[in-house]
Length: 202
Image 1 (cartoon, rainbow, N blue to C red):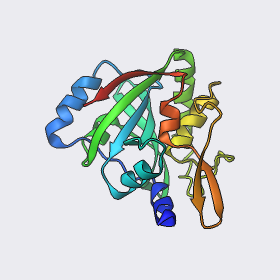
Image 2: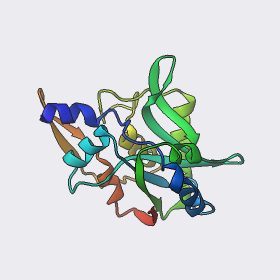
Image 3: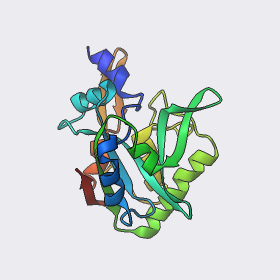
């Protein structure tokens, strides 16, 4: 059972957007609020999202996260998502936040922001660079390497490269058939003293 949950947790494809009835509320709530480098946490209602909530300390319902990147065209999210593939391989991707929020099966989201806007901008630039260089999804969930990234790892390393460790130097441990694996759960980032809660929906 533990192995099954461990396998499910790390595909990070446990998010999609608000249902049609709530998508307008989602968009209107975020309109004019988001800033460059904000971190958005999303709740998924899929099997994988449930696995994250079971394994994550405290049962955090928000099982996926990404970084907000703004442009003249609007508000996008950069995130590591194995369901978005290029040349048959999952990679770090950028997409309109509104598109993500309109997908099915998301229950809620929360927006967090660092106090240092300069570092937030640098973190967003680093995240965008991962999109530009087609950084692959980290199927090995190896925090030691930058050659591939999973969702929480992407956000953590974006800020780490901007000079802020939003993990607090802490790690989570997951049992595997070969021993234990050190990872970062979304709740570890959410509890960072370097971040301020901006809003939640609903």
